[in-house]
Image (cartoon, rainbow, N blue to C red):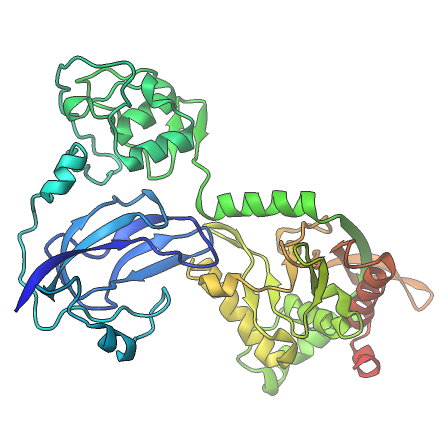
Length: 462
């Protein structure tokens, strides 16, 4: 005979040891019946926005975290009521679990269905288990923050407090306070029984100082943004920005960077680009200077493979890659990301063009997956689109080199022993001097320049 059971779903590691994710939105509500692998939430990791599928078939009994909350991996985020049997924790026995078919999903592999038949629908509100009630005080549910709407705070209950006791708050509020550098002992809670709410912490961090119990909090700012008076704005460091900051600091202070510059007359490449765009063979393909620079880099890499390697500190080895996952630095609404094109060295020009177009569109839409952001071997950053001529790019962690391509400008240039108006570009190459000697870096940059100055050189290099 089967009986209903409560199952908790804890936030999984969504890729490569990530320790936390932010709940962006819930796609379900308490009381909803969900199927296995049905999308129940959208979460943002430090690398990507990911749709989270349900690991169970059952009825939602609790959503433990609010949208905008940063949750550590392993913390419960949602509870389900599923059907099981009285003889054990799961209706699926070990033999069945061993042979049951798993359906793939965005997290890894789909969970095995733990219930057969339709589960009994529960009311949208429910009492917490007695054990949970005994373990900790139950706070009033906090409604999602709505910009422009101010909810009056519940008056605090007057009760004697002990200065040595831990301030009453929920884990998400304590996390927010930690991120904002707020000491909870200095904050007066306006929630029920003196509970410290998100609004209390945000108001304190915003310059309001100690909040007054029973006084409605000010307007709730947009998720993730704390307004501090009229003269400054504070934004918690999280998501892509947090990961990028940590990665750049690690890269800058771990790998000894060296940067070289080369200014090239790319008029022949720009003329070739115009001919390719007019060709029927390339009709429908989006060709740009980046497409040809990427192709030139891939060709030059064949002669200087040391630029396609990484330093393994743990084993004290240089790992040279026999494939190229070409990273493309992309400015997105979520911040700087570097998705990469897998096995770019095996692609034709049309295939590379298609891959670059898809990569750019996906990144701008904020839909880049963690897999697309991992495993890069060398990168390109196109600072020319911002009208910049040159720079000193910082290496993407784990890579030996990054090439920055500047803007294409018409400039007076020596051409056939005369001064002519030519199209000129500056290339900037940063490399890890532990892996790449000056000679290798210089030859690599010179090869790329030679191809762009005279695309016919490819015939002599491949």
